[in-house]
Amino acid sequence: MDLTLKIWRQKNKDDKGALKSYDIKGVSPDSSFLEMMDLLNNNLIEKGENPVAFDHDCREGICGSCSMYINGEAHGPDRLVTTCQLHMRKFKDGETIHIEPWRAKAFPVIKDLVVDRSAFDRVMSAGGFVSVNTSGNTQDANATPIAKAAADKAFDAATCIGCGACVATCKNASAMLFVSAKVSQLALLPQGQVEAQRRAIHMVEQMDHEGFGNCSNTGACEVECPKGISLENIARMNREFLSATITSES
Ligand code: SF4
Ligand code: FES
Image 1 (spheres, rainbow, N blue to C red):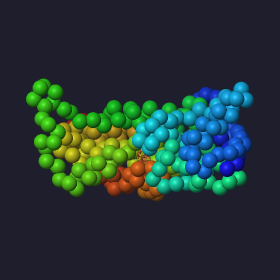
Image 2 (spheres, protein in one colour; image 1 turned 30 degrees about the vertical axis):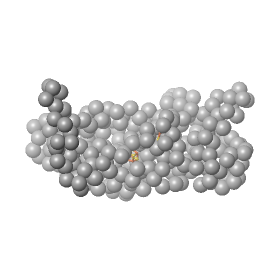
Image 3 (spheres, rainbow, N blue to C red; image 1 turned 180 degrees about the horizontal axis):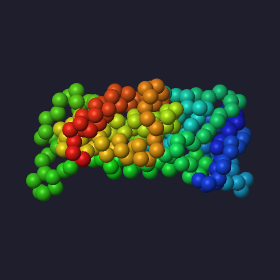
Image 4 (cartoon, protein in one colour; image 1 turned 180 degrees about the vertical axis):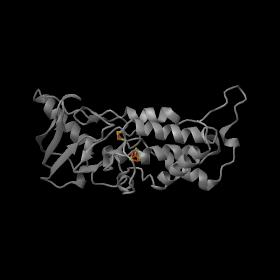
């Protein structure tokens, strides 16, 4: 396949940045999107030019690093896959592909396609944990019975990989799908009850503090989420937050 790539190039967070055009030839339809980017970068390095900076790690849909906005969609045109799982056969020979970083105030661009997602880490530090007794009398986790339906829902929420596609897709740059998945995965389990009230309040407060927008129930985040995280989690987080603000002292 021969393609034209229009890629966002930005030297650093203070640079204005612009789309730059690159022609690439001989791309295998069976290669992944990131392998196509590797090929482009090899060509650029051979010509003595700066390769395109992009985030990646696992390349198997687990780590959530490969954040790219491709032809106006987070993680590109396929559904329920990350950019590293996207294959070039989803595009046509001769096509022009636009590749941009996530755009959100809380995710500043560091370089080219790489954004700073440490805001998610700070939201997690604010409440995305459970207390565990480490006195030596720690109870085996499997000793606590959990209803199958609750375990399944908690597991579904826990599949969120923190990629940020929900934020990039949302017209309000809201992080509520991400935060609600993290609140839900713990709120649904008995082990998560100790900090349940503080968790909902502190994580929502940190989310607002980081500059993420609010949810206006459009649902675009759910459509573009590579892990199919459900909007049902946002409703659960809203319930948790409301009940915590009425009854909590913190
Ligand atoms: S909710 Fe989905 S889109 Fe948002 S961070 Fe988690 S996996 Fe990514
Ligand atoms: S590189 Fe890890 S999810 Fe894509």
